[in-house]
Each structure stands twice: as structure tokens, then as C-alpha cells.
Image 1 (cartoon, rainbow, N blue to C red):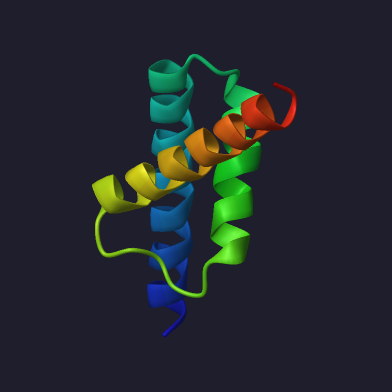
Image 2 (spheres, rainbow, N blue to C red):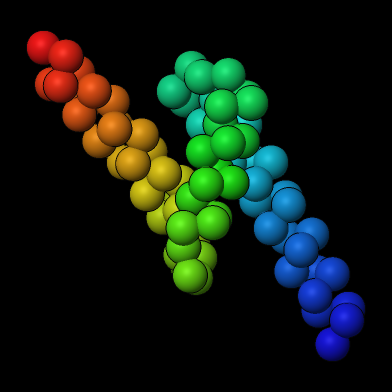
Length: 75
């Protein structure tokens, strides 16, 4: 039981690192900001999406929606 928890935590940590790196490269954002967004998305979700690509696309959609709402708000 304890070994499975360690594996899950390690897997989440690796996913967090890879997501932050991918987001910072693809969207040209600072790595610290990417970490904050990834951490925030983990806090909001009850369960993780089934694939890494699905999780990454959901986070990117969230970022794009928020950017568009800011642009239209101040336009």
C-alpha cells in the first residue's frame, strides 16, 4: 500500500515537471508561472484526465480562455 502511494506521488511530480516544461516552451511563459498553473489545475480537478496530452490540452485551453477574456475585457 505504501509503495503504491510513493509511486503515485512520484508519477504526479514527474507529470508536473514535464507539464511545466512543455507549457513554458509551447506558450513562451516563465517556468514559475507554468508551475503555478499546473499546481492550480491539480487542485481544481477531482481526478486526473486519462492521458498526458488530454491534461496538457485542458490546461492550454484554460490559459487561452483566460487570455481572451482579458483581451475582450480591456478592449
